[in-house]
Amino acid sequence: MKRILVTGGAGFIGSHLCERLVKEGNDVICLDNFYTGSKENVWHLLGKHNFEIVRHDVCQPYWAEVDEIYNLACPASPVYYQTDPIQTTKTSVFGAYHMLGLARRTKCKILQTSTSEVYGDPNVHPQPESYWGNVNTIGLRSCYDEGKRCAETMFFDYHRLHGVRIKVIRIFNTYGPRMAENDGRVVSNFIMQALRNEDITIYGDGTQTRSFQYVSDLIEGMIRMMESGDDFLGPVNIGNPGEFSMLELAEKVIEKTGSKSKIVFKPLPSDDPKMRRPDITLAKSKLDWEPKVKLDEGLEKTIEYFKTKL
Ligand code: NAD
Ligand code: UDP
Image (cartoon, helix red, strand yellow):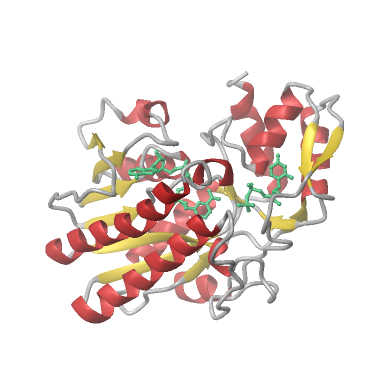
């Protein structure tokens, strides 16, 4: 049995990760300040002897004897990470600093959940890990993109300087049950709008693309990465290469929900990437991992979940 710290454990992805780690018999500490996460996401784990919640902000140091750390704490939806951009940068950078300090002291492995946003509005398509990205340093998305880039830098410097056992994954757009229904990301927005027969809001002309990964595929990738040998640090892309325009996504959601919603077009937010698709060659070869859940199947499961939220 390992003692595992999951920061951001009460969020969308964190709650699925905690669930899996608890099920496998690990002793799990879920650390969260509930900025975008909620106790409700981990309610079902609360009575278990091998699960505990700690209310804490990763901008402050935290100490515990642990064998592994998964560092997820950070708002991920543009609406939320832009609400208090200074707090977003602090969470990414100070959070990484404090967790790396803990990993150094306890000599444990630490996995950072970086993001496809480190590629910015990419000029290379699909994006391999070797691409350095095209990121605006002073725009509205920069607090998140640059915060995550700086965290990656700090991870590699702690490894080079102090021998910390790091793992870095770059997650591409992920969706599934327990996304907050008001979280502002495209999958939850479209599904909630369709279920309520409200207008579906496409930002821009809807030709921008994303590659959507179902959450169970991501969790499998995260665990494989943590369990891989100490010689493989990453960064490694974890995402589903299936690429769809926002217009295609809206049409799929309308069809699957049988909704009467109409599509409406709203202004495109600044620096919104025009396309995104992971090159997952590295994950396939190093982790023997590739996603299993197709968008149609994942959307159906997610729609069933959001129906319970109406
Ligand atoms: P989420 O907003 O549901 O979860 C983030 C969690 O972190 C929440 O529970 C929130 O309360 C907590 N948190 C935020 N600031 C904190 C702080 N200062 N101290 C402690 N806890 C704090 O988002 P998510 O989709 O579950 O994302 C989890 C991680 O994965 C994030 O680091 C995100 O950047 C990364 N990621 C997610 C995606 C995606 O598509 N969902 C893509 C790329 C990367
Ligand atoms: N988007 C949209 N309508 C919405 C929410 C988002 O058209 O109601 C677009 C958004 O402009 C972006 C894409 O969907 O081009 C994905 O947005 P999301 O916020 O989910 O993730 P990110 O931009 O961080 O990949």
